[in-house]
Image (cartoon, rainbow, N blue to C red):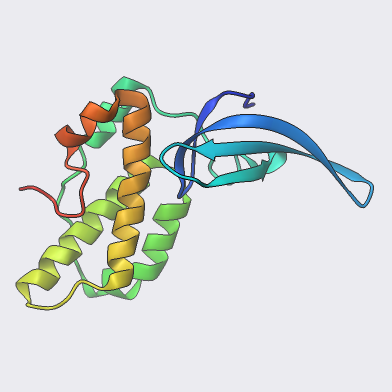
Length: 163
């Protein structure tokens, strides 16, 4: 499906490029891998070719599709007791899906939670802040890849939402 030099988006890490395809022999069993380098990150990983799609690796969205989905960024989310109970599960699911729509949904949720905590004079947890930063970085990497760095300012991709 993917080829060497293809630009891709990988769950949690964001936009990158396949820099190599190679074969590894484990106990007589051959397995093919992609080596991926990520933009704006020193991280590189190897992914079994057979599992790439299954784990959420995908091609970046088109400019049109990305602009359309980015319109959802900044929506307020009602924070219920049920959401609070399932927050860890919701965060994990959305960060690992590889879908930008899920990352945007998570950013909206965590920004709404942050605002709620602020209004209650309570602290926004460190772990929630880290998850927000991870989701924003994921979104930023695809926006920069597809729309260019100048587009970041238009979409308020910071920890604090501009209202």
